Length: 364
Image 1: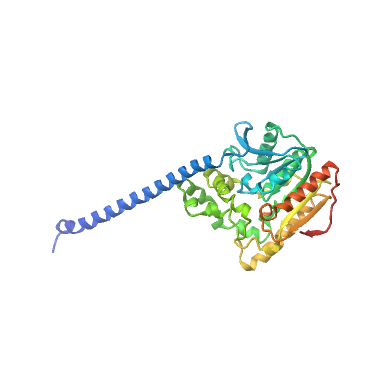
Image 2: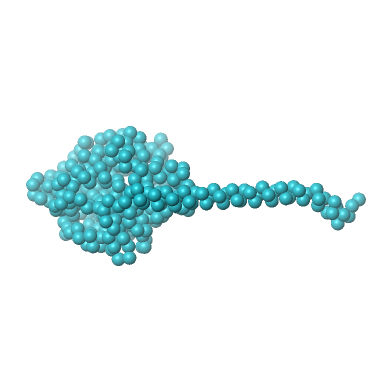
């Protein structure tokens, strides 16, 4: 029998080659991972620089005090139409409607801090802070009221806070498939909002952006590519993707909050008799198919339409129009309808054709 010391002496030479082989494999594995990560980081950095050169800002960067925001104003006239994008969109999302609106009045699309060509935010992304930044932007950019405010999805929340603070300057509003501030408390949306997996996903993804993961996997482009999309929008997809596929955009999106603590209602309120048009997507399009099971899909569409009906009740002078054949991005699939509704509110302010409220839901 061998003693412990003798056994160790005899077995050491036998196990050393195996141990060395393991160390060698582990070393090369670490080196390979490091090279892949470095290559992804270089790719992301290079593409971001190239896209900055390829897609210069169409408007101008305005310093609002320690922060530069991008605003693109075209056309002439009053009231000025101000367009605010959804939760992860840049001002590119309005490029199918802005040229048409500019034919009859001044129209400005802008990028919230963190999106498009604007700087990264330096304050929390609450609707109150975003509304204050917009107010400073319009002042510094010399865009006086009155305003017709056009908001899509999350952007409408910001515009409602802006309206509460500057009521005398707002001539009317158009909600483009607006989110309801109470959506996270309405089934089945409340289940999706409370999903641990979804929360983990949105917190993890920004960490992968500097290494090019969303870009390499095509997630950035997929976010702006839709089935049966108009060819006019297809040409803009690369530009929209370029403005989104950056770390500051993903972080800003994750930082944006809806009214989970009830503070939104303290900063806004009803619109009185202000002209209001609520545009909603066609429920037959089943726009929530990627978020809910087939069993909850019908419930989601029904709940969304109920909330759209509540939004129209914000004003005593309202219209509710369902955009037939359109998904959530009505400004892409039915841009002519968005232009027509904006024109109606502008004409009402001019006195050319007084705004006519309609208690019935229209399908156009």
